[in-house]
Image 1 (cartoon, rainbow, N blue to C red):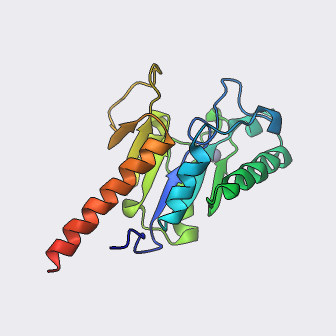
Image 2 (image 1 turned 90 degrees about the vertical axis):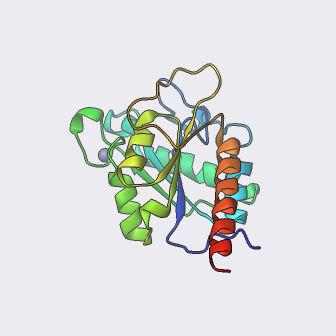
Length: 196
Ligand SMILES: [Zn+2]
């Protein structure tokens, strides 16, 4: 039985900082501050191999605050894509919000604007998509549009679970991919049993 995702109306949304690379309290502002988390590129590669489109949605308020320019962000992303591709992974698209929190834009998570834009531009059916993030604001954005949500909460971290609870809590992206692929396998078995 194939574990390929059946339709390209489905995708896995990944937050960037704290999911793919180490987060920093003062923002990742240039390439020298970017460092992949162990196992993250391999985890993306497993999604790619299983037929999933992977889309990054990320708040980058450092741009709106004047701490980083678009060119530096593009350099960071080019490097990130190269590192992921070396492991066999592929990122279909990156959507970022460049605004400061006080600008009240529709795209800064916890608002779902980036997810809605990706859905429009890529023809995605959001309730069939997954979202992986390390903050409750990621989970809130995903839950608002019906995605299945996974919160990465490394042991000893403090991110508090609030009203919109994630569908799963995992320790890193690798464990998130384990959970997602196991769940897809389960659902495929259910639907193939139903069609017998
Ligand atoms: Zn925004």
